Length: 334
Image (cartoon, rainbow, N blue to C red; front, side, top):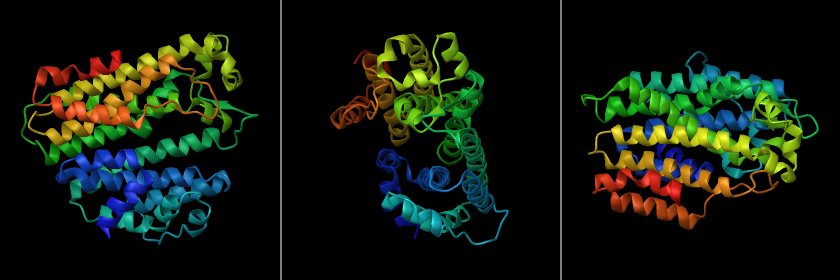
């Protein structure tokens, strides 16, 4: 059962993350994979827009309590599964009880780490649904300020950096002499940076779903409203503010790169598992700087060939530490 969930299903619900999962050391692969599947399941529940907000929040609460071990009631997400467009999401909700059961197969400390990170992620998803549940393209809701944006990116991604760090520390290098406080801080920024890339990539689609993650106060200071971002013609007016958030994302990813290079050098697989999303992310940011991020129906991303190039360069240059460490700056200049 676990092999199927953590291979076929994980691959089908997220091909990009699955590639990272495959390269991770075996000692941490299952814990991270199960946490990802359950976070994806709760996110799928939240995104099932055909159902009322209250119904989705109720199902998320039911799943949260099951994950946390506070409920013995069986999960029946048949109606939710039946409303999924993607076959993989349907299967995920049909098998979510099996994924929850996998949590209990881990040692107690792993169970606690998985439950802690999912509790935080679900809190972010619930808050997101409460904010945007009744919004649409004619009635756009926006985050109010940068504090709300930072809180959101922590809840849904920054906390994953903490979980990742603590899991790696426990299983891969428990006795290594490291600055744990700095490692955790940069791990949080690593996650926030990846989420910021997603937010900036998804501006057009989110707006048409009534969601604006660019804070209203920042837009107002630039003489803009969330509705202005629906028109690609307003990109020149948005450019300076967009660059501010592109810079913020890049700074977070730079902290993620420092984090990667603090890890014991003997763990090649872990370095690659961290490096790939960071280098792909920063290369994506550079592409967004050159293109109009407000064009509807288009998500700015780098090509598969560029992704393969990033991965190949990282593998080939790993034996030469100084050249490896310059990879981040290389992608900025690409």
